[in-house]
Image (cartoon, rainbow, N blue to C red; front, side, top):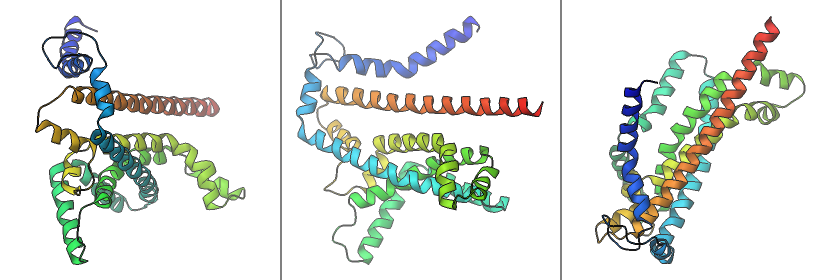
Length: 276
């Protein structure tokens, strides 16, 4: 690797991660200053865990993310299986286009359109309040499901299509063939899609802001409300925790992808060896 390329890469990484490094370092600062580091302390982490409102928002966020991840992973997996079984390339292209829309559509457009739909439906049925946990859950499922499909569909396309048929010829029911043959093959894609869905739901703000009711507050919305007032270092501690949780999920996703890629390479080598 040339020296100029190394320098350029170093500058890019510094530009990307310097703000995070500053945030991380000063989350352990005893003083409120962001320019002078006085003494190493866990003071702001202690204050964070004593803040009931923030802990309540964290609980809501985890509940919402876990629920959205479970439902979107199931929906995305079955949707990917359905798309994979389409024979017409035009139908498949149309379904892929429809799937891509929630991913490429700006969050603010998605958030506003979902809010208007929920309010319209709520008034249609005479509901006293149109926005609540249920509306946020539906909104999160809407933008998480396409990412699950995007991860599971390539695994289905890589799988030997004769394997489920062979399993059924040997006595398996269609459901049994799915659990014994198809599921193990696409499991890495399902895990990666679930991690992506959980991460996206965990830190979503724009769509959550437009579809949240008054009685349900997530962590990103709580942070936004805190920024309107005096910003305390508790936010630095909170942001640091969120960063490390997201980083851990990313590492797990990469490990799963690497293991699956290694498995695919080994299968191709074994196939070539048998052909020779």
